Image 1: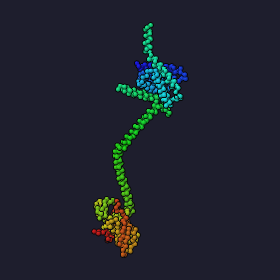
Image 2: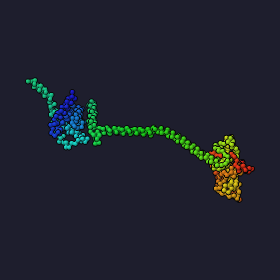
Image 3: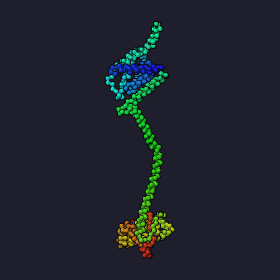
Image 4: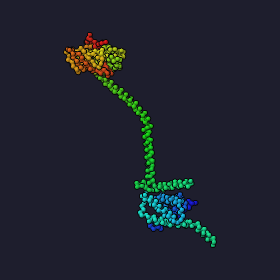
Length: 167
Length: 288
């Protein structure tokens, strides 16, 4: 059940990512929803689940893009595993630690992703810092909002049921 | 304890996922040489494995060849040594046959060149005692051989038959201390008697003190002894010592190498000179 939920979340993130990509100016990825989902899964489910989720999501993302299949998967698997380990070792329930976690995860993911491409001689990334920073901030904001929405969903439903019952 | 197990399992899983991704990437990325990275990595790894296997194989083969196979090499070496020995023996036999053939050719040439009736004989034994210089030949009375027949070789006079049997004969060599032969110096025709000394040299006695004799002169048979045909070479004068009016010592080096006699000719018919020389002193001197 949990695995199915993770897969559905990844699928939704990919669908949203591909839908939103055409609206991004200049084609630059200012947001990585798949990475946000991976970090969320890792923080809530642990390193193994985070790693597997990152691996699967990254491979699918690579397959859907024109890049080398596996590089994104490797980067996301490492990030998912690391995020899961940190989530187990530290209390990451407040907004700021989560923000930091999303920023750090994005930076690490970008470093791994771009680093592998550069090391393998497949692609160059001149001056990536601005794009990486903007993506990190965007991912962090989306991640915190996502966390807040998901965490408020059970209570909201109950409150809505409760208001309907009082009418 | 359970936490440790989970961590261990997690670590292995993480490692497996990383390796899987690296392999996945390697299948798609090519190197600068245009070869897929996975292929090059696999080839590189397996080439090292092959190199190691080859080293092990070479090492094992080297050990086998250097240690274990030495036994086979030793056996082969012994076989080769045996073959070499057999070949050396065969070579000596062939060489011996060639030398015998050469000797027989010379003997045949002598037989055809002389008007004497001769028969060839092979030396089958040497003297039984060093005090008597004799040989045994393989021709006896069955071959027409009789006592006091002359025995010659291509090099010169050998001796005379002293004891014939049915199938073999004993020959007294000219160097025997009891042997003698009528002789003359070829250059000056000075006559004398050549006698054996028991050693590897001859002595010429009864030479006139007025005769011209010097070292290097050739001494031949005179035929007056009734045994040796005339004109056969006995040897060369090695040294001459002259006393008061007569020769005290004339030493002759025999023309025949008595140590290497293999085949000889026995003169069956007496020479004309020997026939004429009747009543002369016998060549055989019995000193004992």
